Image (cartoon, rainbow, N blue to C red; front, side, top):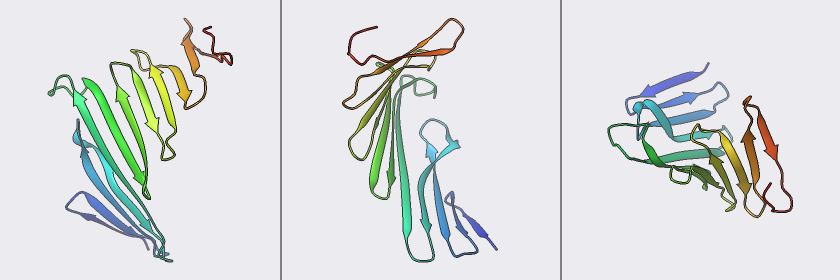
Length: 148
């Protein structure tokens, strides 16, 4: 039988029939509070004693502090077993940048409607995406580095 317990601090502990214990801790989103909580911490411990852990932090800057939709930058760091992946949004450049634990960077550029316009990975040429008038995505690969 699975046993779940919700604790007053917005966390829960679940014990599965095989003895696996899953702990989940929630935290308020910096913009929407507990209406859209983020997973602050999580762990899974299996009967052999092996444990996997995860934690998340999120920070946000708003151009209008009373309007949660006026994001100028947002950064989220996810730590899984001591390895941190960070994703940042920058409104000025309209970019999402993800940095992996191996220091690889993926940069995605978006347009004002949030559609992907370019993606690049550390050390590789970028891939450009265009939207046709029929809103079907077209992908342009340029292996020479020349503008198409």
